[in-house]
Amino acid sequence: MLPTAFNIKATNLALSPEVRAYVEKRFVSLSSVLDFAEPTLKVQIEVGRTTRHHDKGDVFRAEFNVRQKGERLRAVAEAASMYAAIDEARDALESEVVREKKQGISFMRRSSRAMKEAVRGFYGAGLRWVRIPRMSMPRLPRFPRIRVPHIRWPWRRNKK
Image (tube, rainbow, N blue to C red; front, side, top):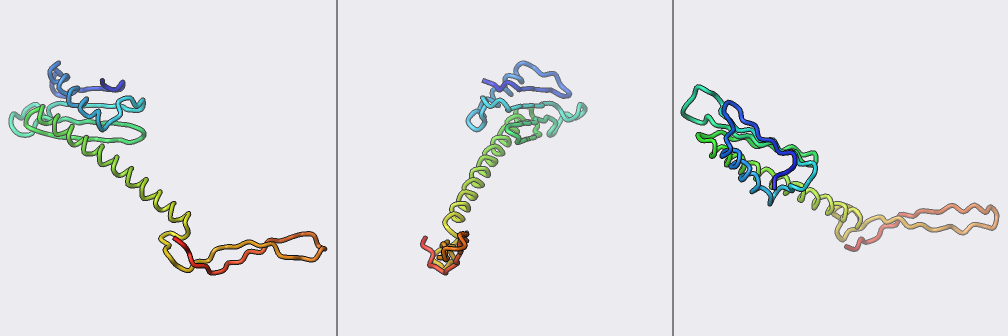
């Protein structure tokens, strides 16, 4: 099943049904790393020749552009045959998607670890002497009736 916003474009050649089917088959194999049910997923694929007058060398080009949840992922490959260029671009896109996911996971782990340590005390605090605020209400005479809290900052041993 392809995403709803899926577009294939051919430049400097005619897009045959065989090439279109091959591109769709190669892109559907990315369903393990991309969420096709995501409504913000937009895919634009461009295949074609770089020039019309060259016969040898890397003259075929494939470009995959994927936009999802504010991210823009792009993979471009050039090869001697169109199918090889499509395969290379698909592999590059898969590695980029996996890399982005790993970076997001590591960022979440790092930030939650920092928040946990900040809640425990100081960032990176072990068994150290730290100042912990203690509030106490001072005993005042009956008049005035305004009570002002007193904050003490005694040194205590931090428990981890």
